[in-house]
Image (cartoon, rainbow, N blue to C red; front, side):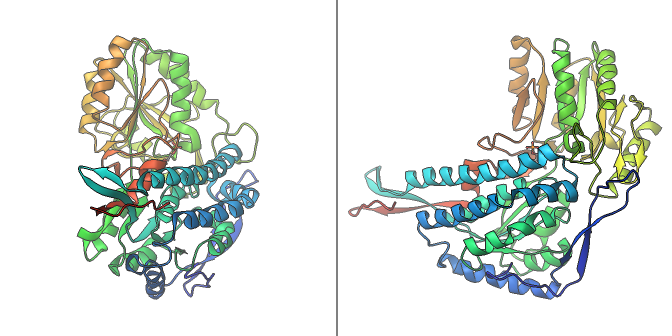
Length: 487
Ligand code: G3H
């Protein structure tokens, strides 16, 4: 979708295969074909988004708030009609189970409505003159320019839209490239995008990062890089911009969220939360628990019961009832996970669960590894998949020191009961990460909460109200005599 038209790119047409199979043995199913953009076509897209923005003077960035809202409402109305098709594609293309696929769709629709409400509120507060220190002042929020938006494969809709929707509603124009896995999930929405927004405001391109995103960045005509993915891609893309000082960043990157389980924790609850925390969507969530610290006094019992629960998880195709583990969309992921397991076991860790590491085609059964230490790759790397490292600790300073040394700082889960022990720990933890979850696993929602991270985990803050601020700049009009209401 470029400049309001659905185009046939001249790059290579690439077949998209499903990661799942309705047979025992994995046989790839052709889902569709995607025409990729050729490198030379990047200039056309950059031109379209820049012309629509027109240095801040275009129809979209100068449009009245109420009219921009109408466009967004029109889009979400049409989007709702695609639910069945998008949910089916989420299951087939990225292997997300039925319940989670439906949740992803519904949460996205809700996200858009909530963004509209929050935008109205933000605007209501900034559209009239107020007397500030003797001056009539109208604080306004203006767009930043042209945004290159790159979404992740694990939430092709929901998380991608948590960048795209606030960027659009604040008056920016956007070039959006869906992730390689999940690209088809966007296809049913192309017409809704095309017919809801003025031409050039939202442009959607398909292709490989280096062929598509690199020339777009090298053009120097991108004002904001909004990306959810890994730091390596984020750094590579920033480096390609000829004037990095002018580039704003909104990045959701890697995390290695720990759970800390104290001796007085409710073990049933902690185990259940650690199961969902580590393994929902096979661990392919940036908010997943990626290392478990368990107090030495309860380690034996925890390990036994946790491993049994992992082995009881059901593997199958996403639409089957009761299934929680599904095939992995990245076909090289099982080998990567196997590599982490081999490395850890060669350095002294054991696989605690019977089924751990059992491997078929594009699926690997989650392995619980214990004892894990800092010499192992799984201690440092963000596994983003089905492997669970467990570490026992004697003194609470041990996990705290590890977290302080870590390159990441998104969230932590803390399990315990005694508030006298918890309170000072929470004070320490909030300076290491951006969200402390008491007796529950880590997660992004509710979408009104700030979603961000320290160190290499994020740049900028998402969530609905924060994202509206992140994708805009605060400006103001000062007047000695004239004052009016700009609703
Ligand atoms: O992959 C990272 C997502 O932000 C996770 O979102 O916690 O809602 O699953 P979630």
